[in-house]
View 1 (cartoon, helix red, strand yellow):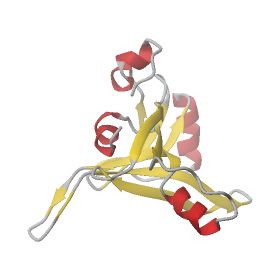
View 2 (view 1 turned 180 degrees about the horizontal axis):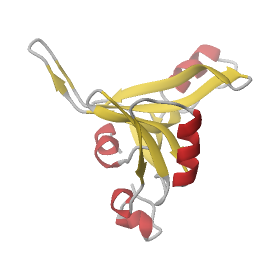
View 3 (view 1 turned 90 degrees about the vertical axis):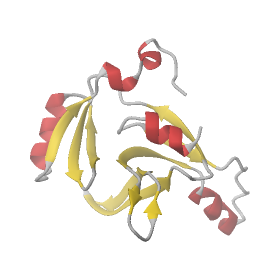
View 4 (view 1 turned 90 degrees about the horizontal axis):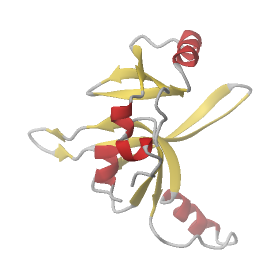
Length: 158
């Protein structure tokens, strides 16, 4: 599916896979493997930004995937996030949508909310928020309307 479909239909907290359709190079070709990995991966959808227009330029809508955190001893040193335009030439797939009843911890920054954490229930989200202070954070429970009827019935959404 296209990046535009992900932007339109995937709720925040979904796991998204992106790929370019090429085969991974053998491990001995490190530069080729590195280039392939930059165009093939998986991440959690944490932000959707609407298109922006200024007098001198315009930017298309985009979304951000959180690919992972790296650190040591409970301290995050680097958080890897990638932002993709809806005009991207890559292919995207919604691997998993958040389940009904899960709770997102969101923060308002700019024009759209950003996902800080996805918890299994309200109590877990409140515990996370109590130990991670954010001034504009709020809780948002995943509803059946957001997940989609095809997921509720047990079919995978595409």
